[in-house]
Image (cartoon, protein in one colour):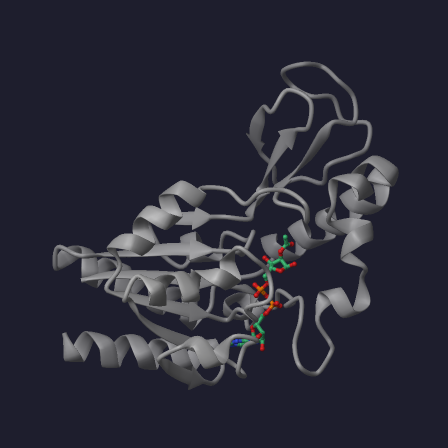
Length: 236
Ligand code: OAD
């Protein structure tokens, strides 16, 4: 059995990391303008504001802990692996809570907050401290080019080839804690359907493309994901 899981900010919400959008209008992008904080143009125009936004989120991440949803997905990954199958865990989240929750291989299609990269030479390094606007690149020596290793609006998500190869092999596609509003991730469910793969959504509330899914389960991820994993493994 091959499962493809796509996770989003809702999986980490109960760990205290904010989501971007919700029906109540309290998400991060209701309070902050993504065009001023999450684009290459914003970084060129106002690097201090961009660094501060990600520095704040990095500090927040370092004090957060995984929740039961992360643990349940790690449990599913291990159970499938033991049975000769696999769970491909693709996340839009830039946090490391899937890994800290026990997952082995996580595909971070929107990058990782705990890594920084030089916008000039591309060198990649671990990053747990704040990044300053006068930081020197450890490889090329340029000043102010180190940026969070995250995908900004207008940039291409990472690992798309690996992702589409895994979708093609999947027996089941499950989207968890994602609003279905940012492409290409929001289009994976339609691609899965076109490939004849069964689809399931687990979210607090119906996502923008809820109608496309074969099965829908609503509730907080910390309870809903564990319940689904238990049911799924019992039926295997
Ligand atoms: P969103 O914030 O758009 O959506 C989060 C979804 O999780 C919403 O549908 C919420 O209802 C749901 N949710 C909230 N709390 C939950 C909980 N406890 N349990 C289950 N579901 C819950 O986040 P994403 O879909 O991940 O990209 O956003 C996609 C991308 O948009 C992000 O990766 C980021 C953002 O802009 C970039 O920054 C490039």
